[in-house]
Image 1 (cartoon, rainbow, N blue to C red):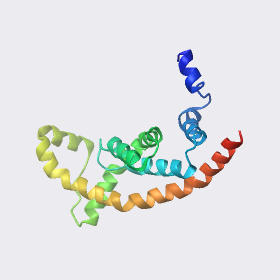
Image 2 (cartoon, rainbow, N blue to C red):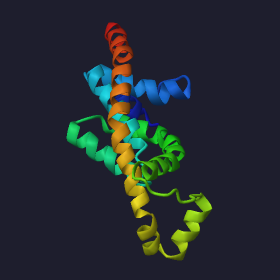
Image 3 (cartoon, rainbow, N blue to C red):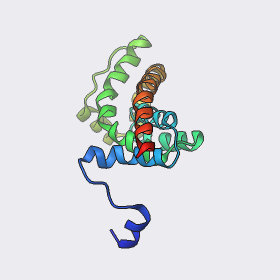
Length: 169
């Protein structure tokens, strides 16, 4: 990092990965005047949008949500990147729950099966599996508001305490 960059942004925070990559950006936003409630909303939406059951769509969704609601872009994307393993782990459960919700038979889904079908004919793949994705999105739409509210209300008290601690320093 150049001397000019250090002078403009301050030195890089030291410590663990968690402190450098998660806590430091949040503390920086609190010092710049972002409210704890706005940060809690950013984290909640980043996590919920990060598990949206259509691969490749979460970056756009988070960007649009942050722009529309005037949330912090770096924090929402940081959270949604951390949610990526959960997104992969929840794809099949969302799809299966959607099939159950709509009374459809469960189609055997495995990664190798899906890749083979996609490589054989992408348009046919979308025709065959598109509705499975839509039903998974419906389940996500039912779960997402509850999950976002739980995360939001759980994060407000610790973020308020952090804001008080940061303002004293």
